[in-house]
Image (spheres, rainbow, N blue to C red):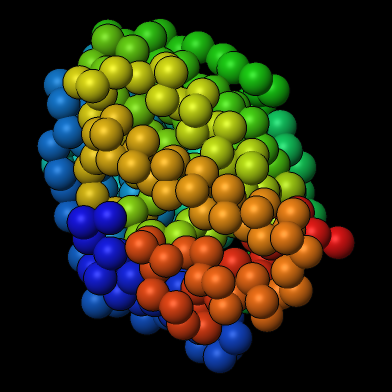
Length: 299
Ligand SMILES: [Zn+2]
């Protein structure tokens, strides 16, 4: 793959950012975080700060945002939205329950927004969760921060000149993922089912699987076309070719892991065969990822 070195470095950085905070028990300093606004297409924007990418749709009907990052950033996020629209946020759509996408829910819920998510994402936000790998504890949200509207497979909004589909394409990153597809504008927010930092974080203790992620990526790739602009869960704006490259990486690594299983390789023997070769540097974080993925195929 072309960008293996850069990808590997960013995998490490992303994993460090994701895993080290909770383990060290250090609260992140949000005072230095700035929100950047990137025009996507038509009346749709992406905001980047700290945590998952935020999608924004503005227009006569009001404002939809997709994910809301961390609570301490809410005021900065609201200020960035105010540059785009003088209307309040009507709907917050959560791509899944993880704190780096939903921690602002309580603030936006209190301000009057309706929060929307897949059924299982709401269920997980109702009680305390422990995240795979980091062991980070995500406390239950108070009622005002919980989704008031949920769906199982699919739901459609007609808003700001778009038919907006919020879709579950299967268990993958978690068991309650949503993709949000603005049909007229041909823009999709994939949540963490597609990310730009290399080997993806898969929350297996909360219903995620690599196989499910591959299936979901096939489903997403069938929804969109070559002109679609993708807002990934983390990283830069992308297109369908980028998503296919990411999917193919997972398919190839899965094939190597299944072959290792058929050959009866132990975990150490599997790691020695370097099943992520060409995609991620052989190091501790890659090996952790492979060990967890191998667990999907070997008891
Ligand atoms: Zn996530």
